[in-house]
Length: 379
Image 1: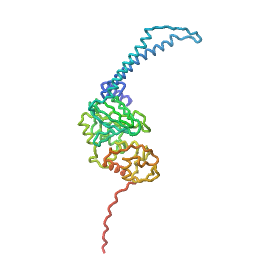
Image 2 (image 1 turned 120 degrees about the horizontal axis):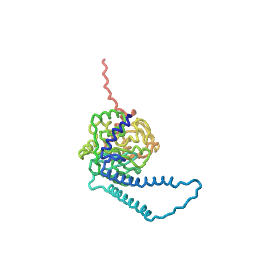
Image 3 (image 1 turned 30 degrees about the vertical axis):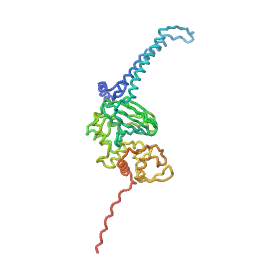
Image 4 (image 1 turned 180 degrees about the vertical axis):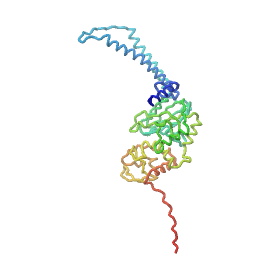
């Protein structure tokens, strides 16, 4: 048996046995999912109930009333009031019923319950930043099972759209205003063993973490997908992140605490982690290739021309200014599209990013070796 077919044969019975998996849709991961899927199935089967007989009748008419070429057409005008009222009023009643069922779900989705756990979401080209409070920011969305969660969403540039298929939840994020969405996750993420995670990390050495390939976060959690569902520019298709559902609030609090500061990690390692977490990799490569912004490879210590015609040496002050006020000095040949990270990165975070840039730049200055004392010559 072919590997793909064998894998499907092994997976299909599991999918059928899982009550959270719908035939048409991904896992039912929120309290909305069952209602949304029910309304969808209702509309689908009602449509099929009309479509199939109508198409069958049309095909039958093609053969029943076929005439030889040149035969004179015959008039078959007739009038049946009861039949005409039935096919006009009957479907109208069904349409109103479907509208009411859909409206009930829609209004529920647009009314966050009082006391919902509130997380700030910032959308930008092309990434996401979640604000967990107390200076903790992360591109992944981490929430608690069976806990109503509200997202307070804003965009720094163009219209984006948050779409979580497993939650059946979608809402636009519009610049210049706050939009809100909420959901109650019902399926918790699992965590793989430390041994499995160590193997995956070894495979990913020297490269950024591949969520699609590994199907777990860098910390070993399985996740639900979060996409941008509104075309927003060149890298729109890459604007996605992971949604991790923790079993308890204590688990989430522990995760937030672990990601709130550098801890014992070296500055270079923390800077590399921030590069991956904060969406830098979407616009700045580390292999020299040109993306939306300049590559970080050999960047520190080099000199660049600005759009103003001036030249700028990339030093600590310039990197800091570019993070906090990215439109102040824009490198020639690039557009001023980078969002500001003011208030989102601590001084230690910025220093760690600078240390990381130095570590991947050959032109970065290195501490000069202390001069060895000259030996006195013996006379």
